[in-house]
Image (cartoon, rainbow, N blue to C red; front, side, top):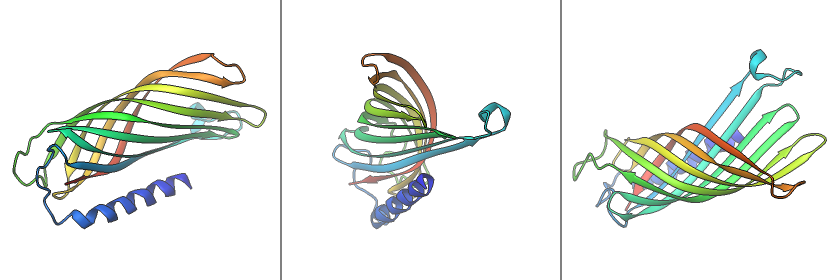
Length: 201
């Protein structure tokens, strides 16, 4: 169901942004322009290595909507929301986080029509979150703080819409809220995101 929700989110995003698709935004990547987008990842793994003793596969969904504006030419300030769900049999691990992300876009287009160009970017941010690990006989709750480093490419499908590809690395800590307060666990992860993005005036 969560994977279907992520697809629905992307379809709605594309439909909303297409209202601007026929207009080349003035000041592409310039101060005062806006961004709105969303991306997702889904994985399902099985066979002996990825299954538990009951034969349950591991599955993970990640959905990440975002929006922001260009505070300076080429430099955008985004608010990222992120939901992650990991399941394997009776285990359900959910993590929700949010935070600011700075993204610098390399202007390889200038004043030309951006359609058909690949716009590379780099990102740096910090996300605060809450996580929960549920099993049939126990529950753990955590608060999290993660640095986010990213690099990606926005492939312009039109003067406004882009297909987005991003590699994201996060590192930080998860601190137990229950049952033992203050016990922290280091964490890091790498994710590959596929999404859509709209550059709006």
